[in-house]
Every structure is written in C-alpha cells, then in structure tokens.
Image 1 (cartoon, rainbow, N blue to C red):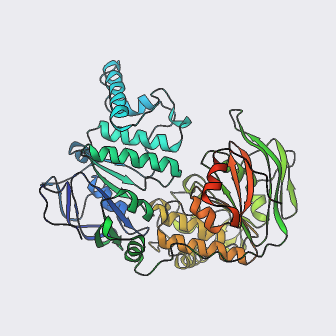
Image 2: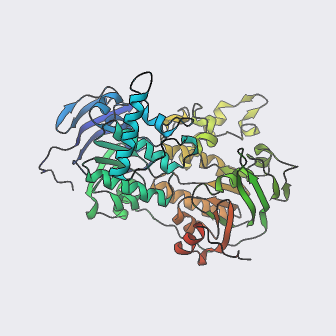
Image 3: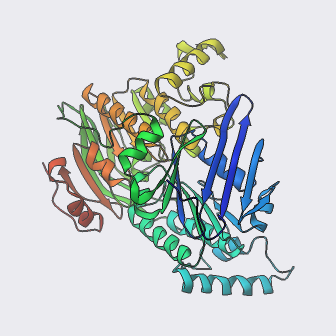
Length: 516
C-alpha cells in the first residue's frame, strides 16, 4: 500500500472525487495520492473512469464534488488553463497537433511572442535545444507533423507540455500507437523527466509497462479505486485480478489449427503512395480457412497499405488479390462494399478514421456497412427498434460500456469504441476477416475476450489476416507469420519457428526464404 508518511506534500491529492455524465457515474468517491517525483500508474478496464479522472485533474471536466490539492494546496480547476498555470500538463491519447504545420510552429502555438514571431521563434528554438540536451528529446524543428512517425509526434506533445511549465505530466495510453522501440524511447524520456523532479501519471492497459516503469500503481474498476500498490510489491496477475474482479488469462492457449482451402491469395502485389513512394513491392502469400496469418513489422513498413488494398480502400499498380475465388486486379478493382458482400469483414487499424462515425450513436455505428440488410429495414427506412435490439445484443455479448445504444460513439472510451467495431464485424459470420491492431487501447479483460473470439472464428473455418504492432500478440495468435520491412516481405515462418529474436532480425530487414 502507499505510505501515508512522506517528507513532502503529495504532488497531487484527490479526495472523494465524483463525476457523472447524466445517469452514468464515471467517478465515485475517488481518492488518490501521488508522491512528488514518482511515476504513478493508473490502470483499469475500458470505461473504468481513468481518463475521466485525469480530465478532471487537468481541468477539462469539473468534478461534481470532492477536493483536489496540488503540492498540498487546495485548488479549484475551472479550465485546462487553470491546470497549466499550476504546472499540470497532459498528453492525450489522440494527439492535438496541427498536421500541416512544422514542429517549430506547433511548439510555438500560444507563445508566438508578437506579430513578427521573432522572439517566439528564438525562444522556442532555445527550448528545443535545451530539452534535447536535458532529456534526449531531439526533434527536427523544420519537419512537417504529417511526415513524422507517431513516436516523434508524441515526443512533440511532451515537449509542448514541458515548455508550458509542466511539473506534473499526465499521459493517457501513451504507447497505444507506438512500436516496442518507440515505447522504450518514451520510457527513457520519462525516466529523465523523473530525475529532474517531474511527477508522471501514466494511464495504460499494458501491465508489463506498469511493472517496468512505475513506482506505484492505482487500480480503478467501475469508477472507483479498488487498490493502491507499490509496483515492487505486486504482479501483473494481481493487477489484472483487481482490474477485472476475477482471474484473467494473460495469454490464451492457441491450440492446433486445421487449415483448409485457400480463401485469400495475394500475388506479386505492388503499390505506390499518392506521393509516388513505393509502399508495397512484390508481396505474395495466401491465407487458408481455419488459420490466422499474422503480419509482423515495425509500424510504417507497408502493413497499413496492404490491408487497405485487400479491403478495396486503396488502388494498386501491379499484381492481384483473390478473395474466395474472385480476383481483383488494377484493371478490375472492387469497392469496399463489393468486397464486404463477398463475406469479407474488416476491422480497421484506425477506428476513428475508418471504423466509426463519432457523431453517430452506437446503434448507428453497429450497422455501418450493413445498413442495407433487410434485418434493419426496407427501402430508405430503417427499423429503429430492430437496430436498437441488434445493438443491445452486440453490447451485451461484447461487454461494451456503457450499454446505451443511443449514446454517441465519441462518448465511449477508446477501448469500448474498439469493442463496438469488433462486435459489428465479427457478428457477420465472415469467411475472411482482415484485422488491424485488434487490441489497441484495450484492457486485459477485453484482450482475453478478443483473442478467444479470433481463435473461435479460426476454429470455425474463418481465414484471418492479422496485423498487430504487439509482437507478443502476433506470436501468441498466429499459425504462420510474415515479416515486412520497407514494403517488402522478409519471409514467412511457421509459428513454431517464430521466436522474438528471429522475428526481430527479420523486422530489421534481414530476409529469410519463405516456407512452402
């Protein structure tokens, strides 16, 4: 348990914080103490109230009741500006950068220094140099945000917070879109910040990260704090049990596959980006019924473009894709709707851009792409009762919280948004399932459920193409694994031969011959 006797006032103390949204009680009498200069983890299931609590601390939401103290002083935060003024910064799960502006311009925003920008530019460049020297946060000031990898974008968000004077830094699911290497670099930055006296609050669902980086951890369930632990005194199994309220399998037994006929075949596929860059080159593989075919690789090596080509979302220049005997070529493309009609389901990597319409309610999102089915109405008219009944069933079966079909998609946590997308696509009984990052931003209980569901679909004869940045997920679920680097395939391995070291070598660009 946390030690109540410290030599200094807590960096943050929350006392009996309550916050509701209509009938939904997101936080219930939450009390939390964070010691100065520590890295403190906050874990819990999707919808447990973690992000709401941190948004209360950041002034984005105002608590209905309770007390907040910063460095021992009671405070009232009416806005994020109040929090920033007290030295509290936050890096949100979805970044707040202007994509068509440079790094320098993004970091300058809000401190331009006058209409000519000279003093603001000079001050910002000095800040970037200082942070690079102090914390190893090197960035190219002239780079455009849209051209930068996700890990560097996140670094810029942290730079903006530190430039604003943050001595308390909140990070909401910071590694959800990072590769393992990018996550390691982030942790180096956090340790450097800690050595310089910055207090870090880390929201994450990844228990291995909690064990690796934090000093203490608090567990939330159903809007309440259910446990505080020193990290050195706990274990992933105990934290998972506190989060979910039951024992959780941290890895699922894959069992033996029983592959059948080839349902998906990719042959000599080549594709260039809109800027003329080769993003896929000579990709060939097949996926059989009753198997999970995993694709491993550092993000940005062609996996996203490959999924988009197969789903009909991206044009390609050479090669072919055969789906259930239907061949797609550059001269004979198919739309995503036509591919869906072949009983091909698609769980996209980016749920916000391609999986949901955030302004639509849950029941509308539950039938996206399938809304013309006779099950939901006829002609131009939807049967609202049938749609709501369908959504209620999906939410119940997949534990989507809160179970309110009328709630707008943007008001669900990221993990519950993901569960809604997965529920919609897997409920269609697909013959082929294309999956991108199925457990990104999802808690351990939901990960277990999703993994079991994918394996059940495989065992029922579905051909599954799986892309994940989580190497353990690829190894744990896949029957065969293809590694990609620079838009090329480095080799295809049977799962029994695919250890982390061997896959890591291939991910670095050292190719192996494909297995038959």
